[in-house]
Image (cartoon, rainbow, N blue to C red; front, top):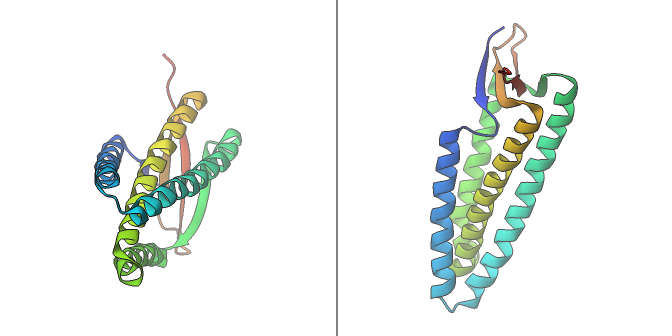
Length: 171
């Protein structure tokens, strides 16, 4: 059986991209926070940033903790069994999120919407960097590296997605 392996939670290149995104979004947000006297922007950012960071970080850390518990007994953790058509749901979630961000300034005050959107982007970026640091610490403790795996489609039309621990060779 062949599998595709990708670094968990993302590769070094993905880390650099997320650092750049987070620094840019934070710089824009800090500039707007200190250059504006509009209280609604400041409040919406200061509420949405810690809220997004807390929710996303807790979700990722709890998911990783569950994976690590299963990896202690085996070197593989199967997260999902999927049909080939399930990626349409993933793309639908992305489209719905983008539409919500585009409609938000029309529904509520654009200044408040900008604060919410920038707070959510910054919270998401810092959450992903926190998750990467947590996974790196766990990998050092486990003595290996975590990888997503995607198995080939079986005869019943399903494939498996999960996390695999690849142990480092001791020298």
